Structures are given as C-alpha cells and as structure tokens.
Image (cartoon, rainbow, N blue to C red; front, side):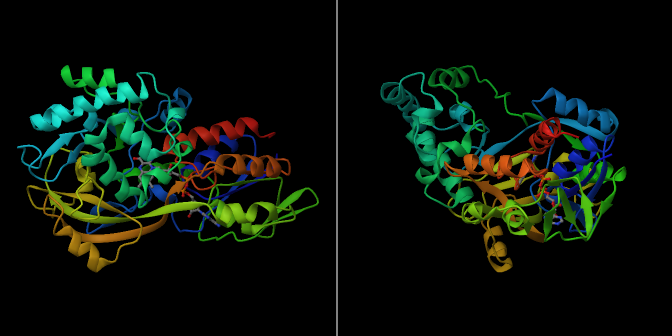
Amino acid sequence: MKKIAIIGAGISGLSMAHFLKEKCDVTVFEKENTPGGLIRCRRVNGNLFHTCGGHVFNSKRQDVLDWFWSKFMKEVEFTKTDRNSCVFMDKHYTSLEYDSIPYPIENHVYFFDKDIQKSFYDDLKEIDRVKGINAKIADYDSFGNFLRWRFGKTLYDLYFQPYNEKVWRRDLTTVPMSWMDGKLPMPTTQEMRENNENKVEEKSFVHSSFWYEKKDGSQYIADKLAEELNIKYNVIIDRIVYEKGMWIVCGEKYDRVVFCGNIKEMIKMIDGVDVDPYKASVEALAYHGTTAVFCEIDKNPYSWIYQPSRRHESHRIICTGNFSQTNNDDSVPEGRITATIEFTDEICKTDILDNLKRIPLNPTYIDHVYNKYTYPIQDTNTRRMIKTLKTLLESYGFFFTGRFADWEYYNMDVAIGSAMDLVNRMDV
Ligand SMILES: Cc1cc2nc3c(=O)[nH]c(=O)nc-3n(C[C@H](O)[C@H](O)[C@H](O)COP(=O)(O)OP(=O)(O)OC[C@H]3O[C@@H](n4cnc5c(N)ncnc54)[C@H](O)[C@@H]3O)c2cc1C
C-alpha cells in the first residue's frame, strides 16, 4: 500500500482522502483544530456563523453528486431550496419597499421605471450594432468591457460596475477575461429581451436551487467526512523534503504528497526539487480577502442580497438564517434572523459598525472574521504557469489541488470534482 500525505482538511483534502483511502495508507495534516477550511462554521450565542460565505451545495457534475450523496442522506440530512436572490438598489429607481430587483437583474428590467427600461432596450440595439448578435468570450478584452458590452451601459452604470468594483476593488477593465472562463452566464440580447417580455426566471446557475444541511451548516459536511479519516490536527506543515524517491513530511516518509493548502506557502516549503524558477510568479499571484460580519437583520424572504449601493462598502448579505431555522438561536427575536454581511478585504470593527448604519434591514453586529485568502485572482499567465509547475512536481510524486493550490475560483463541488480528476491521474 502506498503511503500518502495530504496537507489540508478543507473540502479538497477531505474528499481526496476519501478517494484514496481504500487503496492507500492516507494521513491528513491540518493546521487548525477542526476540519473544513473555508467551509468552517462555529456557534456564537447559539447562532450558526459561517466564518466565510454561507456555503450551499449543488453541482452540475453527476459523478460529484453521486459521490456526495453516497456519503450523505439527502432527504434526512439536507433540505433543498430554490434560490431567491435580489439586488437592493438605492431608493428611487423603483417603488418597491427595498427597491429590490430579483436576481439576475438583466432578466428583471421590467421592475425598473419606464425611462430605465427604455434605455436598456436602446442599449440592446446598440450591442447588436456594435458587437453583433453572436459575440463570444474572446470578443471582449476585459471583464469591464464584457459587462459593459454584454448587458449595456444602463445596467453597467446602475449595477454591474458599482457592485463589481466593491467586490474586486480595482478598475474592471484591468481584469482579464481568462479569469471568468466558464463562470458567467452569456445571455444574448435576444434572450434578455425575451426573458423580460415573458418574465422568465434564470434556472441555469449551479445554485439556482441548492442543498443545505438541516443542522450545523457546511461544518456538518466537514465533520462527517472527517469521521472516517486519519487526520492529525494542529500540525502546520512548513517543510516537505524530496529524498531518494520519497517525500518526508513531519519526519515520516511518504510515497506521494497531495497538497491542498495555499500554493504561496507550498512553493516555499518544497525542498529537494528545484522550484526556484516558479517562486517569483507564485509570490506575485493576486488575491482578495473577505471580512464576514455576523449580524442579526430583519426577517426577509431572500437567500442572497447583492448591494451595488455606493453609500456603504458591503457588497452582499447572505441570509444564512433563512437556510435553516436551526441557524437561529431561540433568543433571536420574532421578525429577525441571522445573516452574514460581506466586505471585500479587511475592515476594522469601527468601520464595520459605521457601515452597518447605512445597510438596509437594520443589521446589528454579533461578530466578525477576516479571511485573508478568499478569491484568487488570475492573470493571463496564471493557468499556464500553474500547469507547468504541476507537471514538474507530479513527475516526482507531488500533487496539488484545491481553491488556493490551483488558484482557481472553485466552488465546493468543483473542488471535489478536481480531486476526483486528480485521483484518476495518480498512479496509486
Ligand atoms: C465567500 C465565499 C463563499 C463561498 N460560497 C460557496 C458556496 O455557497 N458553495 C460552494 O460550493 N462553494 C462556495 N465557496 C467556495 C468554497 O469555499 C471552496 O471551493 C472550498 O471551500 C475550497 O476548499 P479547499 O479544500 O480547496 O481549500 P480550503 O477550504 O482553503 O482548505 C485548505 C485547508 O488546508 C489547511 N492548511 C493550509 N495550509 C496548511 C499547512 N501548511 N499545514 C496544514 N494545514 C494547512 C487549512 O487550514 C484549510 O483547512 C465560497 C467561497 C468563498 C470565499
């Protein structure tokens, strides 16, 4: 039996360990004292706090769904919910209570006043004239250019630009299209016209409907997957040495290593294989962090609320209290739920409290966590560079996979799928 060391007990390391454990002797090393990585949750005053995001599950990959549901009892442990998301516009664009426009905004322009609707339809004509009716991803030279010329100037000014600038904190014309490969819908002008005229709902997003744990949120997934595994907690791996065809991790020899942490740390810990030519490029990889602010807010029917408003710095409210009633402690008053309010990068408590005053639904602060690495940012060379590093290390029996190992914008299911594909490539 081959001995395998897996670094990291996030969803990538946990699923990897499951795929390998029948055939190999697997040890997982985790620096924290619980499994989960980004999907970790904890209780605060009895309420469930997703310390990053508000993780929900679904997948377009049947093999991922089949494996996942072989580990969990779908109907017993999870509930299925249709996504009910909206965009909160600043007042005066509509006559609605919160000026809330259902998501995705481009299918619901009929919620806006007549002038905005007219500009939107004029924009669609302009897009047809300038870009043609069959524009492909390759026809846009940046994310900003894509949003402006896919959805038109009106929606760009009202929503896409202010919202995405809050998320990405940069000029959107500097974000390359390679970053969004396969991640964004590509509605044609004709589809947008028809969707608005026929009031069609978008059902093609991976999370248009989603599964959510009846108790303990995504921590439930991590805890249950961890049960059958050999995980060493509170162990920070900072050196991995290649010597005489074996890898040494924490003083023990392994035939193979699968690294599921952050590539920026990985590149510094490898010894015995020359990775120096990659160091500068890996160190230069860009990323964003997120401050997750746990709050009590007014009860509402939404899953996610997107916030383009320039009056405050938060871009999204995740109404985790709506995902499962068990996420709200009995002490939460009638008419209130718990939720996570997100800010890009680090924001101090004083600024959080100041922002909360200008965010709808009367949020009151409970707790907050800043995660330094949440969104990998790629440039046009990232994928090529990572692929060649992968090829080099794999020839020595060192593999890596995961959101911040691959520097890819993976969801949980994509991380599982990527681990699945990797196992098929490994000679074990
Ligand atoms: C804001 C936000 C919202 C999201 N929402 C969703 C959602 O609703 N649905 C969905 O499917 N996906 C969602 N995702 C994506 C999801 O979080 C990731 O795809 C997934 O959690 C990545 O898991 P991972 O195992 O690759 O990495 P991580 O979760 O980062 O796990 C890495 C693990 O390795 C450990 N580690 C790192 N270095 C070392 C070391 N040197 N020694 C020992 N241990 C180490 C870490 O402690 C951690 O536990 C969201 C992501 C974000 C940022």
